[in-house]
Length: 581
Image (cartoon, rainbow, N blue to C red; front, side, top):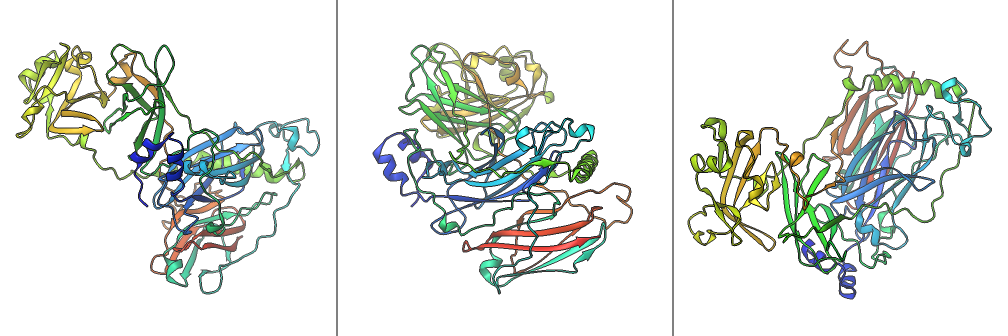
């Protein structure tokens, strides 16, 4: 059943009819593979999220956004990430800073649509964080310790020892993994050959982690379970209205209230702008509850958006954004541990190694993956005027008259200044219709506001002469001004412009790969990596795959952990071990 985002927003808050429609939409469940359940300050948690359809066991085609958070026993959030999903999958990472206290935490993952499910169907996993740079809470001390780690009275995790690691592979004929040997030296090449036993395994979705096993106790990582067993059905959110699924992209919502009564206002157009060279512009209308929704299906590079109610009529409307809340289950059982002095040397050594690794972060940096961007219609201009190619004039009006074709200054029905863009042939009835006007991507609804802007600060003028419609709003053409500094919105103030922080999705990365193929290239750089390899998107297309990595200067036992799902939704978990001497 195909249900459009527009139809869902119209149904939001309409009671029984909406409930009936929402119940026809499939539920969702998520699973997260993460590289470890024990982290020190200065280390990184890597994770891969799978969003699945419980009915089919396959990747969900519904939500395009998912969320990952970490919460403590006090139910406070350590971090909260938003992920863009592609084919139901996304990935991210969290660097543990020195201001997060030692303690037991829960990793929580979900989609907004799952908030409507019964029984809080969110993914949870235990994670222990150890911070050797802060005093530790007495709740995690086996006995009082007078001094902190900094004064060498080290507190260590020692109540539970990790279970002995066990190699395991999926059922016979599904997936096999072969290491070229089981013992390796430092900075040595390791090869892993993967062989899928059938087409459904070869067409599956997997992630791979290679990490040194810890000598300290820690909770075990949950393995992927059959998704069909998960519950993710529509239920009562306790909020009176269901939470909409993010079907086309990131969903921003908020409410518009009248300035005096504080009551929601219906059927008001609200404009949203992300300014800059790659600006984004949308228009939405409020519903009966005064709620508006913006659907962002494009990546952006800022953490601020600007909202404005159009057709102000002198009213100072209040715009309030809805905040993303973490659906923390009412009952959470946290992993219990205590600290003592028995493994002080291990804690001290690991902390020093982390500091050395972080000191060389610039030469081992990850690479941001630039998203594939489709040019929106409001940036697909037909004409461009680079003003340095012409004689400069002092004002915008003079510049339009002397340089720019097809654009002039007129008046609207209230006698206020209004730009005009000449229509293309066949649209002559567009004369008198306002264009979309932007200054560095900020939508300008009162054109008189920029008439006094110094023309010498404008770099380019862009024009489109087509007719455009966004919702119920029709515009004749587009007129866009670009300044040299691209910072117009930073210095432009109007009461009706409301700058709001944006909860931006995580940026995809190509993770750093340590190589020793080039002899001597990094010979003098220390290498204390515990995480040797992390591949969030591992493809077995073709049935065979060889991956490789290099060991570090840390001796010990390492775990190769592959997890994921076949193309039919069957969970796959594979563990191999090798030693570094």
